[in-house]
Image (tube, one colour):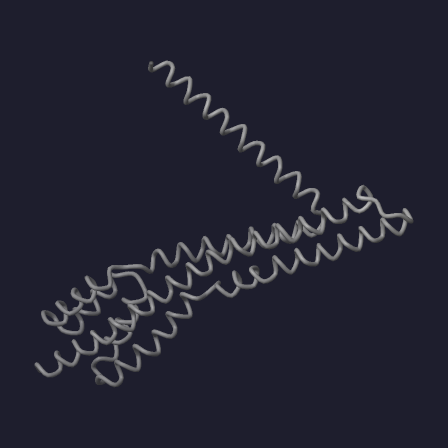
Length: 230
């Protein structure tokens, strides 16, 4: 029974490998048939995915347990004052900790100064979080435009073939129409892939910004309570 199971698993793996190889061969064949505009479309995908990987890494590192961090900062403020709060922020990664540290740096100048510092540095951190998204958005726009341009080129080639042959035949126009359809298809697929990543990053950034805003209010309240105790 065990040998039969192993043989069945090996057969399934071989069939899957053959299917994957067939799909890869199909993609290569269609890519080569798509003409010159397939190269910039592929470049748009590769560069766009590079920006996606960079943003994913950055946003993953920026994510922390905000509630636990706020509790830790409040405890530090109660026990050791502003300096203890700064120490906690310096030992914590992420935009929330950076915003808190900026506010605590100005805490000695009053609550208004601390609040202004939090707002100003929050804008800076938001800019860091959104860095690179404009390029992903650019490739989302460029990829289908390149595909449509390849479509126009393919149709022109088809009409030129008809003109040279002085007749209309499926065999004559097939090559040009194939280029026209393939470039549009690949351009739209690239745009859809990058759009999914873009929307995901926007949602992550919105969540981080919301955490920064909510936790900043709690920090100001904690600083006010610390001031009243003095």
